[in-house]
Image 1 (tube, helix red, strand yellow):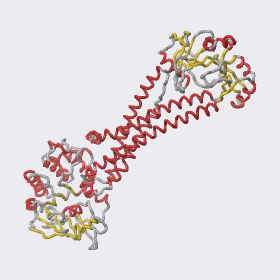
Image 2: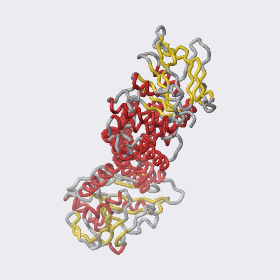
Image 3: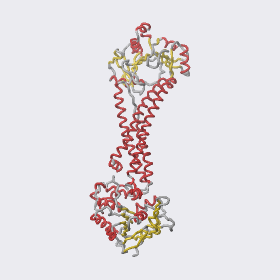
Image 4: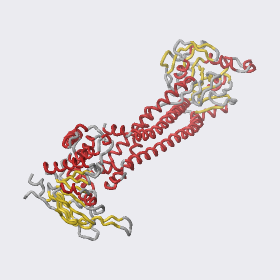
Length: 390
Length: 245
């Protein structure tokens, strides 16, 4: 308590030191939260793609972006191949073609036949409200919303929602997964086929009936069949398709996010180093300013160990307070940023308890380390010299 | 007279400050000194005569050196303290000595009470007991009322009285005062000096003070005159009033 009172009596110096640490920790919290979110997305994606092969039309550019139409019969063709346990036709589209999404969190709608995975889908999706899509829903305009999408649409079970101009009834809301399903609208295959059909140019609409239209097939291999072998077999046996396996996803998206992560962590580390140096600087200044005080304390019987302890504990407390304030400000940015972003469908941050604890622990340790060197040299001062110091 | 034991015995105290390879200052050139328990002794002399250096050595803030002379000896209460480690000397300062400085030297961010309590804590007294002892010591100098004030809220005389309370809180054997009245006007000087004299006569507190002021010197039992790093003479040696307690 006396320590806190003493810090309060040196308001300017204490405030400046705390500010120095606060800025670094603030940056650390914000950037780590961003990295957390991206890692959760990628991890979720990696978990989703693991153990399966995605099949697209060869002209398609990738998942949910510019997906090209395919015929439903391709799913049947694939089902006949050796090593295929299940072949699930799907339609995956941009949820709202008018609104934009940001990297990694684009909103999509996904139409699929319930049960087409034959129970092989391992990615956990659970309803927190209402229910999931069933096979009986085929033919009706119902939808199950991911948690972020539900918040954005302010929807709950029973809400009527217009998706691409068609009215749907919300029958379920999903638990948060921190990854793609949070911003996905799940619907029966047939409903999604009609939406897809309506979005295509007239010549294609005429060439292919809505109920024959899909844009991807999720293929589950038999036990003991490797995804890459199966992917190769699909590409040679079926015309005009390309495949994506879990390993390829990890490779493609993983390396992209690794760069992104490296940039984010780099920025956080730079701000911490700058913050850390500023703390060391202010601690050294603060110790220098108090040379005389240290001389007094030494003269009246304060041991070197005691002086070091006093200064280091003080630096640790400053680091701790700076960490808490930085965490508070960072959390504010995270909460406000997510609140603002949610309306445009962009949830950028994920502040985990681990990040919070790390931030405060780190700044406390940083404070202590920043205090040790000045404290050590202060305690070694000749008390008589220190007393003469003005 | 049997309890007139020597509290402080110094032999061959030398101290040389090397300013550069060729330039050195012999601040002390072989001081022999005995101070008896209960004495109030003034050390006087012109600037540069080595008064402060002597005080720093007696107060274990600096160590004497040989500089080619015989080995220095310094005994406090019969114990040789010359070769003690920094830790032991610090401990000894806290337990057996009190310091009063010309410029008060209070810690500016601490209240009067906290300043005094700090010295008690350094001597190993724990928190609440240290505060109690500090309050008592502030009572001795008549400043209980001002216990919660910080140094900048106190007058010079009051600050010096807080410093005296701090020097007395551990009831040390030896009080060392370096120009204790140097920054005070005449009235405050008299007040502080009378206070020190009172602690000396009533409690038998041994007191060594450095001063420029002949009037301050006159108040003491004995004056040690210094010049050029040597003791010049021992003037008017009276029987210490504190003896026999």
